[in-house]
Length: 343
Image (cartoon, rainbow, N blue to C red; front, side, top):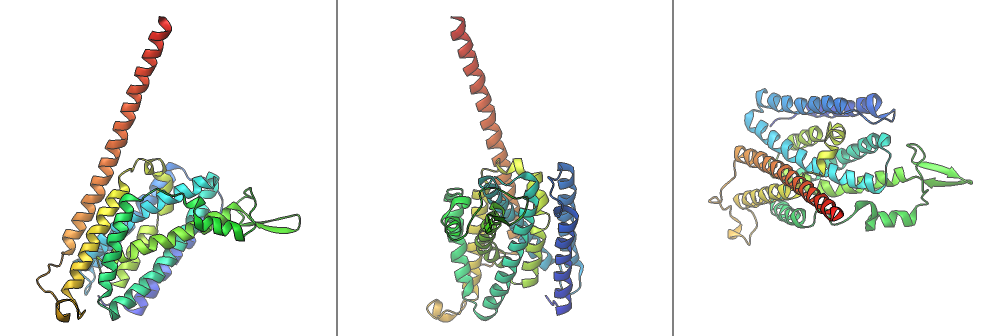
């Protein structure tokens, strides 16, 4: 895939322009967006991401193979970004962020995420170009992250974890919000507000999630341009999606397990690819294992899409069934109470 410096500059400039517009048009004045506003902009950004994938397929020299890699990467990053939203929700609940200021927190968090992922993309591209064995490391990392995602998700509160306790010990923190300001002066002394703590917590979580997302997408494509654009489009509109599906997030009870399956699948795919291009002398004498299958991108795309769909449907069915059971139990309890009162 031939990407000139001019294409990179235009892509980065357009990405920055979108986020600048977002800030001045929607975030600068604190308010809680309506469902209609969130739905319109979510649909716009998802549509834009899909159109970009078609453009990749139509551009001479790029083609539909790269378009398939982009779509698989975008879908994976979008699913991981929704998991980000769940953690953002936990953080903002833990810090009791007023709803009208949540947009600013999300915007800053998303920009930090894009910067973090951009750095990891550059590092990942350099490692892949120079060390083919890095695929073994990425594969093993994703398998470990898949296990952690499946069995340790939601066990800790990011707002009160070790990192945030360390921050609180070293920064003078005020107990109350002062609008959306990051610091406040009291009795001649400067304090940081809970708003700054929220942003620090989200920045730290972004760093953790970048460790998940970048190896995952490099398991689907070696093209740094596709990795960057898939991540950028996955993060665009994430703020609106938070307000659109905020209530739905708590119903996606199997999202962690679905993402674990996706990460494990990509981890296996990376290990297969590492074996296929093997250069390590203690594995097969340093020769590639050409009999190891390479998983095609069309299968990866179908597998990821099917996993996301199954996890979503199963989650909604589970929470709906639990709600119906709770409603029945409540009715039965009321009937028993009424009968006891009548006696």
